[in-house]
Length: 240
Ligand SMILES: [Zn+2]
Ligand SMILES: [Zn+2]
View 1 (tube, helix red, strand yellow):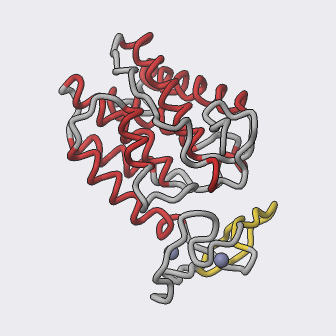
View 2 (tube, rainbow, N blue to C red):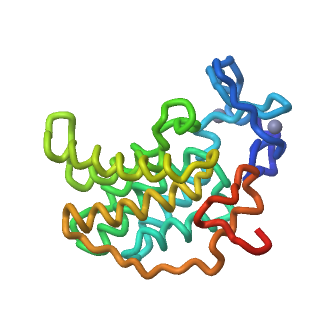
C-alpha cells in the first residue's frame, strides 16, 4: 500500500497513535507491503506495520553511517544515528544499531573487522524481532552486544569460548537493562548496552574504546517517549 506518505517516528508509523500490545497474537496485514502475519502489536486504530517495513529506512541510515564513519566511539555512533530523523523512537532498528556501532568502532580502532562484517552484523541484528524485550525477556539491544562479539570473534554454536563470551556480555547488558526498570525505551536500552559492551571489551579483550562522549542534553527523547519515567538515569531533570 503506497498510501502512507508521512511516516510517524513515534507510536504507529501510519497514524501516530499509541500501540496496543496483546497477550496472544492476531493475524494482521502490513499497511505498507501487504504481508499477512501474526502479530502481538497494532495501533489503536488497527494499523499494523511489519518489522521489515518499520525498520527499512532506519537500516539504510545505519548502513550508510557505519560504512562511512571513522569514529572509534560506539556511543558517539549510536547517538548520531539515533538523532537522524529517519530513526523511530522505538523499534527493531535498535537491534541492528547496537551491534553495528560496536563492530564499526572496533573496525576503526583495530583495523581487524571489515565492511562485510558490519553488513553481516546489521543483517543478524535486524532479525531480532520487535517487542522481544517484553515477550521473550531479552531486550534486542542487549542481544546486539552478543551479535557484535559473535561477528568480531567468529563465534558459532561449535566454538565454546567465543560462544560463552558472547553470552556473558549479553548477560551484563540484560542485567543492567532489567535493573534500570521502566517500560520499553529503545534509547535507554541502546545506551546501557553500549556502556556494558565498552566495559566488557576492556575487561575481556583489552580493547579500549573512547569513553569521553558527552550528550548535550541528557536525553532528547524524554518528551516524545510516552513511557519515559522519573527513575531513568538519562532523563532530563528540567523541562523533560
Ligand atoms: Zn495507526
Ligand atoms: Zn510490511
